[in-house]
Length: 305
Image (cartoon, rainbow, N blue to C red; front, side):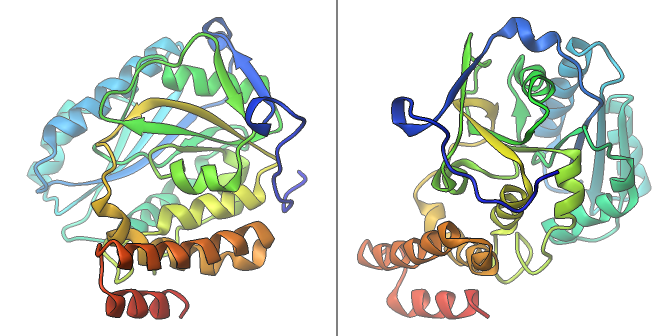
């Protein structure tokens, strides 16, 4: 595999990116297995959200012919009774582990990767979907088809929102800019080939929910996947369900996102450019009074440590 190069748009097309159309009929294409790693707080009040995820995975598994999805779930704040209750509702292809207390989001994902990461095949499709996210109908089948049709495709991402829809027919995949990845790439929307998941390895446990940075672990993972991928593709459509983003989160996640960019700045000039841009975004948030100058100075200093 030719890892380590930076991505740039291919030849000219509308918006400067190379466009490929993928029809729904192509979804019969095959790939090894879909591996979903995620975690949930058993005391977090997300029973309905978790059941919605179970339903979307079951529908996708059936559409893919069965035995194609493997779901690994770590339940936090979970005793044996809660484990049995969730296991009774989960699909047969879901493997559940539990811990008594709470872990950071990165540590929880790493716990699953340590136990089950060796089961990922090089051509498996790998996702780290949140417990309150879900695949719209035909989305996972579309993604599987895209990876199967392009052996060099290692990274796929799309948009998400509270009202997702099935991929359009035909759906247009484009060669993304790094800025697209930073805007839309998240644990919910980022899907990678197994070989890249192996190359990227663990999540940075100094980043993410449950750490002082409060976020940034998915940005860091996305940047490392971007660096290791032979080709990345973007579907500019909301085909994965999750709560809609709102402006108030920009200040909340600024420090984590800046830290992720700082950690990956050595990977190329495009990341360095986005790092400078992010610092300026922080100043803009100060002008908008979304956080104070003192908070910006502190978060910026800590992000570079």
